[in-house]
Amino acid sequence: MTERVPFTPASTLGRAYLLYRQRLILAAPVMPFVEVEVLDKLARLSGDHPTAAFAEASGTLGTLLADPTLATDPEKQRTFEMSYEAAKLAAFPATSAYLAECAKLSGMTQDLSLNAIDLSTLRVIDEKAHSDPALKTFVGQLRAKLEEVRSAPDAQAYAQFFEIYGEAIVMLLLRERKVQVKRLAETNTSMPDFECETDDGKQFFIEVKSLDVVDGIYRHKEMLNDALESEVEHERQARKGKRITTSEREIAPYRKSGTDSAYDPPSLNRVIDTLRSKWRRAFKSSQFAQGPTFALAVVDRLVLPAAQQDLAPYYFDDALDGGGSSGVLWQAAFGREGGLVLRRPDFAGKPGVEGVLTAPGIFVDDTQSFDAAGIIVLDVHCGQRLALGLASPRSISDDWTNDDTEGVLVSFCDFWNDADHSRGFELATDRDLARVPGTKTSG
Image 1 (cartoon, rainbow, N blue to C red):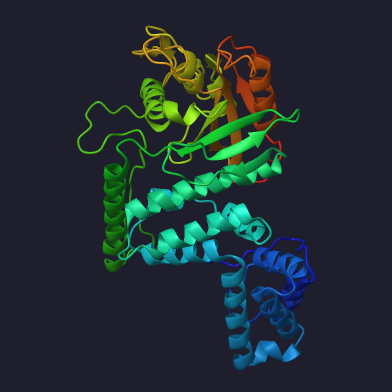
Image 2: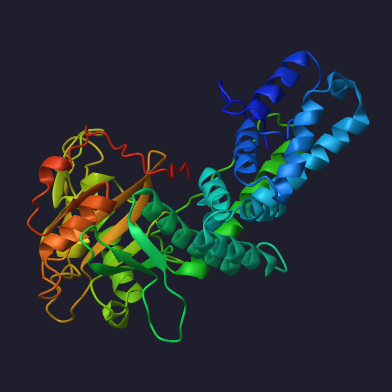
């Protein structure tokens, strides 16, 4: 891990480390394991929880950083490192377990589920867990899942780790957007994950699923092998004396495992088909039986082609040579069988019609109902966490109307739309995406 130093640390502890660092700026590497972001969080947590285990270790760090002999005393430097690691482990248990697991794979291979975890977000979950019992439960589950790994890499355990992380993200986001929420206890019956309440006291539920890549664990294992071969290629080139080594590998979440001769990377029809089928398999009718329920899908591992534009039936794509593209979320929810699928042409003059929809959207399929009040999709676009919503075209009951659904989507989502494309004016590409969700993500 490399040292990261923001321009203005927010705590006395962070500023003390910068002063120490400045004294040794011309010396050899200065405690490269230290992250000022971590020091700031330790200082803030220690102030809120002065009797916690990490508070004493943080106090030791401050005392040592004020000691001018620290720079020349190896024993004090060892004490500093031990105190720093102890404080991190106590303050950020899930993050520490995650980083330890990543270290096992370093130089050997890479796992998509682990790579999709955002370190800053995981630290926020750890940080808030010290005062939030629901998040504390998630932290315990995250640690326990990685403790089950007996031989790395374990793609199955990593996928399950991400699923727990996905639920924790939802809880974090609901809290930050001031939605009244509580996590429901797990039972043998099919129940939603969260019980929520509108501002006017109406109850609704949220069922969370983290959508995996096409063919799930089989595809994960293929990608682990691809990453391993990439690392081997780097090693081979290094042994031949190359100072700069290169290799190439593909992360294709929509590609089927094994030989997939029909795979077309730019295909939007495949994305639409994948979303529709995964929604259908992930969310069961019994999970909507408790009352108005929103199906929430975390799609970090799938990756959407666009951001809020995916909520539109079609949108103008001004990249490369321009052209129109189908909004994959809207089409998967409301598209009609036989409707045109457009995608950005590779070059000027190439046809922009990819084909037609082979099945109706999940909300307009007359052969099987989908009883969710709406669909919410959590994705990462340009390093930012976005909540994108789609309203069901049907009223759930006399006590829960379309206006109630709209109220939830307005309060929780950055952008939303409906079957009539009523919110098209909000989906322009030049709108500011930032609504300060608090879970900024980089992966």
